[in-house]
Length: 259
Image (cartoon, rainbow, N blue to C red; front, top):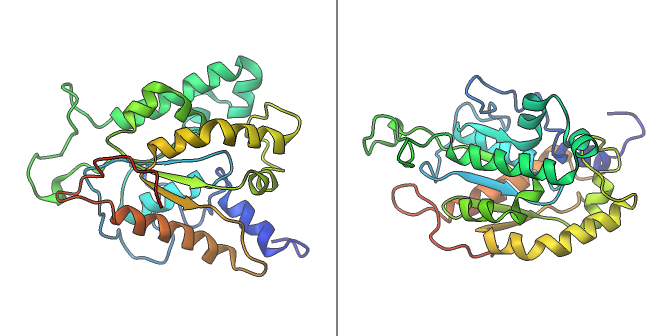
């Protein structure tokens, strides 16, 4: 950290969707990051049969939270920005400038649909490894950091029905502060704050409709340790998801949009 950088500024960088603390979340061969919270192995997964999708506006911390959850539970991790960069060689901002917002959003929607469908068989059933009831035989369902735009796609909202959806809700003004240096994200308005307020107004009812759990992605308190702040956010998400589990490790029946 630079000598003049505050702990709050460092925390904003740490929770940035493409600024995961890399020494804590090193990707493993199956796409899941290694646990970065001091744990020596995967923690008990409360929802082994249920995909987990983290949604929210740009800068809310989706990649950070989703990658940490995947690392804790030993699950595959899928991230919209990183996967699209690997597939196209371009960031979301570059794709939006070159091909337009509609094309970018179509790619982002396709990414989510593929991530949720990639471990299903030809009849659309989830692949459960050897097929037994032993949870050790299950192929882990992914934890997905979805693009903010997917909630506006009707197909994506339908696909989120069987998933456990975590909405990282954040104040647009706080998101604007976090994104001041986020050149990898598309900017559809020169006034970043106005853009985020408009997105929040348009997408808030949709996030509410698909969410099973709402976690406030708050600003760090003055002097608050960035690592502890981020880990507290992940802990809250993990505890909330554990409370959604049904017998057999599946997820919630009804989208509640409640904390």
